[in-house]
Structures are given as C-alpha cells and as structure tokens.
Length: 599
Image (tube, rainbow, N blue to C red):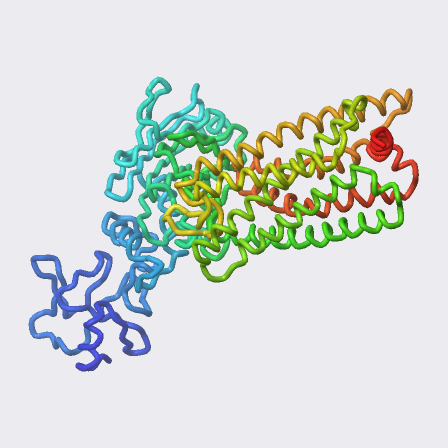
C-alpha cells in the first residue's frame, strides 16, 4: 500500500516502485504518458491529449497502478539502463534509446549500462532483416533493407553518405565517395541454402557519449570514432565470416594531423565485459583523403582516428627504452673495461685501430644513453637555459653516434673492400677529429640559431604526451630535418652500401673456398649480424615506424639494446672459443694485416 506521503515522494521521480499484496506495482505520475503497451488500472482514464489521469472520484493519494504486459520493473524508469526498451524498436523506443548517445558521457551523472545499450543496437539489425522491408530515416539512423538474389552476376555497391539513406550505386558513379562493396562471392556461397537473402545496411550516429567507444577509446589518449559514425552490415540470422573475398568500405575524410592515423575496426562483443573495437580480419588502406577497409565478415564497422603515439604508448616506449638503454650502458661499460684490460695484457692492442673505433662508438653510445635518461627523466620543467643545454648535449651525442657508426662503415670499407693502398698517417686521430669534431661544429651552428628548447609530442587534442628538451617546436623544424633526419639518412645510406658489399664478399668468398660442400654458411651470417650492430642497422628500423605501432615497439626494443649487441660482437671477436672462429670471421684477420701495413 502506498501512503499519501510516500506517493508524493515517489511522484517526484516519475515512474516509481511500490509494493502491495506481495507483488510490485508501478506508481504513475499524473499527466505522464506511459508506453502504449501499459495496461491501466480501473481508476485511471485517458484524456484527449493521450495522458493518463485519475478517474473522477478516484482517491488521488491512494493506489496508482500500472502494469507492463506481465513484466514489472524493480527500479526507477531509466532508459539508459537498457532494460525498458529492450526488444522494442518502434519509433518512440528508438528515439528514446538514442537519447543515451548524448546522456551516457564519461563525466555525466546519468546511470548507463553500456553493455545493454550496445546489445540493443546490435540486435536492431536482426530486427530489420527479420521484421521489416524498407527504409528507416531519422536524424541518428539511416537504414535500408533489401532482398538480394544469391545468383547475382556482379558485386553490389551501396552509398554510405551520412546524410542519406544507403542506396545502390554503380561502378561508374564516382560520387558519393563513401560506399560499401559486397563481393558477389559472398552471396554465391549461400546458393545451396537459399535463393534470396535480406540485406540490412545501417548508418548509426553514436554521438559524443561512451556508447561504442570501448575501453581503449578513452578521452585520455584522444582516439575517436571518425564522425561518430558506424556502418552496420547484416544478413539477419545468417552468420557470415572468413570471406574468401573481403568486403570493402570506403570512408572519405580530411587529411589527418601528422601525429594521427586511421585504423579499420569492427565491434567485437567478445572483448572485455562490454565489448571493444578489434581489427582482426580487417586491413586498412590509407590515402590522403580516403581510407579503404577490407574485412572478412559482417557486423558493425568504424574508422578510428587515433594518435600514432598516444600517452599510454609513449609511456610504454619510454619504459622499454629506459630498460634497454640501461642494459646497453652496462654492457658498453664492460666493452670499454674489456678493451682497457686487453691493452694491458696484449701489447698489439695499443697499435690496432679497429678496437679503438669500436670503443669510440661504445663511448658515444654510452653518453647518448646517459643524455637520454637525463632528458626524459627530469621531474619539473627546467628553465630555458637549462633546457637549451640539455637539448644541445643530447643532439651532440646523437650526432656523434651517427658519425662513429658511419666511420665504422668507412673502416670496414678499407679493411674488406679496398684492402690495398689504405695507409693513412695518424689514422685514428683523423677519425677522432671527424667523429667528435664534426658533430660539435653542427651543434654550435644549430645552437647559434637558438634552435634548442622545449619540445612536446602532442595528440589530436593538442595535449602533450611527452615533453623533453630538444628542438623548439615549430620554429626549428628545418634545423631538425637537416641536422638529424638528413644527417642520419646520409650515414644510413653509406653504411647500407658498405654492409651490402661486405656481405656479398663474405658469402661469395666462402662459396668459392667451400668447393662442393653444401649447407648454410652460419659463420658468415653471424659475422654480418655482428657487423650490423657496428654500423647501426638497429637505427634503420626507424624508417619502418610509419607502418604501425608494432614497428615502433620493435624499433624501441632493438635500438635500445645496441650496446648489448656491440659487447657480444667485441667479446666474440677478441675472445673466440676456437681459433677457427676468429680466422673465419674475416675482420680480425684483416685488422691485423691492416695494422701491420701502417707500422
């Protein structure tokens, strides 16, 4: 029984819960129109406006009962919990539920059940196919259901213009650019079971809220669904997956920011507790103003705009780099100590140039790693002068590392390629002048132009994901490209040519001396890998980073471990387990000949 005071409190919340005779009843606020499938109590009557009001003579403070078809709600009426309109797809219910696209925000006060709401819209495609033939055209939803013969002679194309209902288009029509191509083979594969199928194509505007955003698309990493638009494709209860020929969805868009990229995804209900976006079975073909998604199944699809380096990725890369650089610094220190010990116990090391070049590279790389730790590890923001100094020091040791890797390639060229007439007076001194002096001149010139300062990697919303002392943003872009990217490209190309020639010589020489012996030349492979660490092959992986986030992780991991690779090569070269290893490696033997020719 609902008392007068309880009725006044409950009426403030609209539809509320009451209990009478061991069953739950609903209290109806005067003047509110309940759903059409509610059965009124005997003391309620409908006015001309369609609202339920107490009948004449009824006790307005007494019981007000409304029962929904045999289903009784146990909580206040809240559409965004996804239960009230479940399974109901009339216009009223669609618009009512669509309001949750705006209400369910990350910082909002509206209680929402994302799983139930997302399931509601996923099931809507099945409802369209099974119960409706025609068109749906609302402000948030554009859909068409069409019967398609499984014996078609060509692929089907439909437009996906956001403001229009999807319609068939021909191959010759170049507009609109947004379209979906359904391969003929998709329908041919169903010929054995049916001659006609119903195809539903849906364009759903999911708004700015949390629906269909997933755990990964948080506001923190600035990822977003392009235009908040989903494309749904369904054949009803017919499951379509692992297509031999993928379907194609073309999304048109403006050129993305330089630090953002597009990714084709579909909604995977099996991921996480509420579902999430996945790219399994989908490929992405990027161009300046349109992206083509190819997927091997039917469901809801979208194009994600996400940072190439979001905050979470940057933090993960920093941790990987710090761990790798820390290990490299330890092994680089071992390399220098090992060289010092060899100079003490082996007199020939005092006159050999090859180990000196290796140690110079090790020192420059050690100092670069140290500068990296200082640059990314500072807590509070440094002053302009301090940041200028940090940026200059980091730039200097980076250029020193590039230069010594190039000098390693030059030394390798003299040892293996040219061989004869390679004597240079004060050879290592001249190399040192280039290895340490040339970067100093470049840094002095760059610093005189006031190019160093605060630098930040930013996401789509102009939020800094990483701040460090480097080149000034925007004002020193040309200096960055010339003195870092251009310098690296020159040393990279030179080292690649030399390494390629050395590898060719090693394998052709081993083939000629092996005679009729068959089998892989593992010693030659290991020799090339060891030389690769000296000329900086791990840095070449930076060229592949635009291919995707996975290549960025590969680059960060292997490049940060370069010091470990150099130590392994140095130890194997000068502490062989067998004398045959040293002689077969080639470089140790040639080092001795080259040194003897200079003495």
